[in-house]
Amino acid sequence: MRRLKFVLLWLASSAFGAEQAQLLLWPTVPFIRGQDLCQYQDAYGRSKSENTQALTQNMVGLLREGASSGNAFAIVLAMDELTNKNRALASTGLGMDVVLEGSLKASLDAIYRDINPQQKRVAFFNPLPLIQVVRELHDQKRQGYLDQRYLAGLSGVVWGTYSFSPTCRGDVTVTLHIETKEGVTHNFQGQGTPETVMQGMAGQVFEYFQRTRFPSKVKYGNGFVELLGAPGSPISHATSPENAEKSCEKLQGRLPTAEEYIFLSSLGDWSGGVTLRHEFWAMTNGRVMAPDLPNPSPVRKAEEIRVNEYHFYCVQ
Image (cartoon, rainbow, N blue to C red; front, side, top):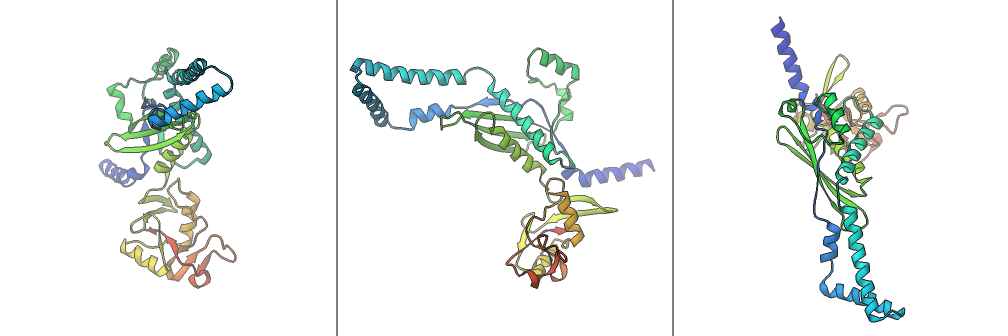
């Protein structure tokens, strides 16, 4: 009997593991600094003749203001040297990687707090003993070392690169790479100021990993409903409800009922469902789910709607 229970549990975990598994990431996110694109743009963005012309114009302007030729040349060189010195001071030393890492994790957590999906599919997990974490923080050390015995609890690691943007206005260009145990890599990119760029990156990570992936099986009443998607894409379009129904039959599925559409929409795109939005959704028997037309009922005949395309996905 115990063996039978074990087999049933194993089958259940196999059926739901792919879409329910949480991605647990090592909490340290190392960022490698790349080429300073601002300096590169300064050096190669203009030809030598253009640089010479700009230098000449600056000198001519100083001469018109009454500076001697020697002083004008010295002032132009001093201004250029001061600009380079300020940029060098701003980009030397450690700290940018810490800013980017902290901003990424804080922004991702903020999104999860605001949306609050049923399951958090991306999380940073620290397998080290708590006392060791406290000691490293006390010594102002980053958690860069990972013992082999702690790897079992992790699903992957995150690392990134950053470089100063060619706009030379304080922006950074950031790439983020998430690598799983299986060797799969997911890559994201963004550009902005150091304090804001990771907000957009966190949004990309959240949307990619949290959005409903087909097939998706969710509990419905006393059983389950499985979202199969549509041929060629998770959600597709058809010129009529009948064509949508035929497409689902090819997948050995069917169109959702009105109750299923409403229930799955209440779950939303981040908890295993699909939001209805302001669109028309195909149903069986030539009917349409029209969420923006609730009175007297959102379920209408296709003749009442008369649109060029109907959204649909298939279930089982």
